[in-house]
Image (cartoon, rainbow, N blue to C red; front, side, top):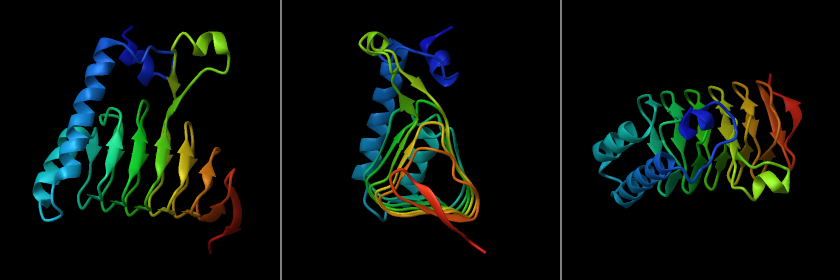
Length: 184
């Protein structure tokens, strides 16, 4: 099994593998091109996103600067807005549902490292997917960690660190992020 297959399957993998290094270089080159385009160059931006992402819907707007590791593990549905300075460490799938708003300075980190130092110093990593439902609003400065699912219609307050799943139709805030009320 290749290191890329191990990565996608959530197993320990070696991120210094030649194929993975080349994949990251390609994605980062596309991110740099994207980030240097003028706001009026919408069609060129969409071409880069279609080349970069695994799946992309219509009416997607991502403000610069945008960075990701691979791109091919990112799936975004229709009518999604991602504000400035987002980072997507997409070693596993990152799925974003339609009509979702993401504030500035947000990070989505599927990558993780072993807790045992012996494994960590050998350079191993593993990754778990992140799923964001439809019609979600994620405030500025939010961090979403590996393995998290955020349900449909939920609001995540600015500055939150989402370490565990958050259900649909709630407001959740804090570090660690916790539900504070239902949305009716």
